[in-house]
Image 1 (cartoon, rainbow, N blue to C red):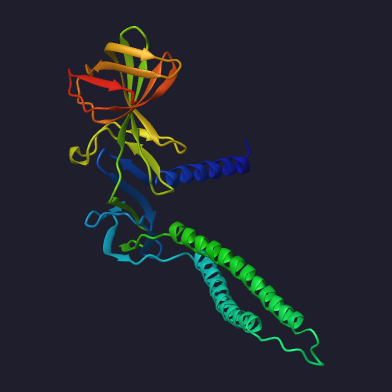
Image 2 (spheres, one colour):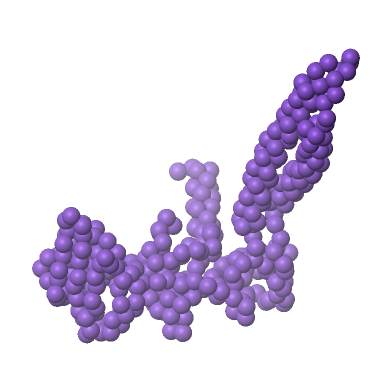
Length: 329
């Protein structure tokens, strides 16, 4: 292979390696009672600045220098929108202001034509040489005022609809924009690498079980961790523990398109099994916890020989105890 090709290949490997490292720099570790956020960044000219999720818990922020660097100052600044977001928001606000001005003008026109219609209808018709049919004149004036009122009502309805659309766009934009604080860190050397960590205010995984009945007095019990409402742009892993237990050795990755992580699978005995499939599915059974650990309260999806039968509450069950699971009717 020529030196030029070797150089290109080496450069490609470096880019791929850098991209992989960058992808791993934003991570969420989901515990049963909370979420730990960790991310890495590199400073420029001794300054690192990046937005944080809105829901970081007060008093949990940590900033650690890597590769022998030194952190000199840490500041949390109010959230600020990107230049593009701000331009889009300014344009929407201007549209909203114009529509609100139009609404005021339409209200004024409505008052004028309402008064005109009332004035026409209250006129006492008088026949004259210049007005041989006063009733027709009054009727014509009233119809004109009412027609103008109809056009005002139509314009107002359309303006109200457009105002609603603009307000919805503004609300969506405000939700989408970074609402958390901006972290500013002064470090040395100029291109120091730092790791930021914080616990989020809310979140954690909840137990979601699969009970796969097999019709032979046994069932496969699968414990899944169900998670929701996570900040975007992070890789996610789940640990089967609470934060007080520290960082355990075992963790389970969550696929980007999923909200579940499989934590454990057991084969457990079933007793007092009563299953009806047709015409309407119904079930009741006890499942004995011989997993050796406490099973937390959650919900369970029930299957019989692979067929989904419905969902049921799963009670907290100590090791050796029997959990009673039944459909709700």
